[in-house]
Length: 331
Image (cartoon, rainbow, N blue to C red; front, side, top):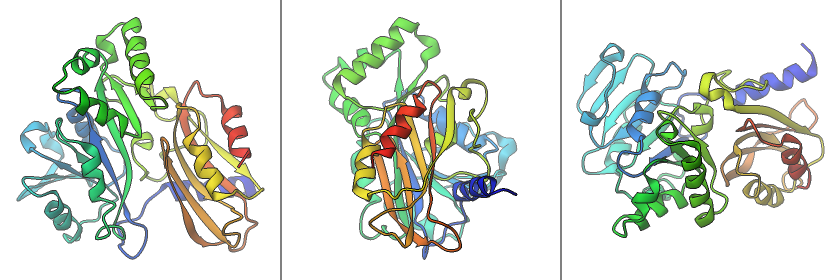
């Protein structure tokens, strides 16, 4: 196997996850937000039912709203349904922290947690839970994903009773799914995109039907081989995504890299990989980013290899790869 193939194999292993280990990397948590009827439950059902290879714990307010395929259910216990693909669905009744604690001490082999926030909840207050000192060693806020009804949004924000809530849900999100575009014509979709960007500049938006988007965009935990080093990520509607490997020998300055990621084109959704930095020249530094949110931290020592930065980038098919690579080169 040649050196390039070996490096790409290493990135594939990076994109895989191991069962939760509190002494190691904290478990990634994704918060799903969006107003009532936007399509969050459709997305949750997709996460629970697809053969993606991840063991995901999905926390919901009410089991009754989730149409779990009975053929997938392998076990039912108090406030938890276990599925054949390794996922579990847990009901949160009164206390989110109690539900999280119960999940963490249950011994379940979980790769990631997804929390479906209530349609009238402020996601920022929920997200603060996962950066609390009590959870920093066990949980890591991976991202906030907002689901928006492309056809209904302008009318919804025209209502002063809910406009601040909806703007807050969109504004604090790392990626926005502009859902139900099949129910709106192209001028309407473009008008909604412009409506959002005029008020919230830099928001990463993805157009979806039935909330169909690759998990490689939604979650920072990936099963082995989900992101290929080729062009297409997924299939069908999902073929609108691309991934590639950015590889450089020159070291990064970590603060410059963090600033660069925050100002990349909105069509860049996810970045993950190891980099060589001037800040920690003897260590591999792990980079994980969703939207403008980035987590850059020393990981382990460079052993048996020249320090070379390699990042997997997931973006919209129309992205200007050369411009993204050139921006990263300035760091």
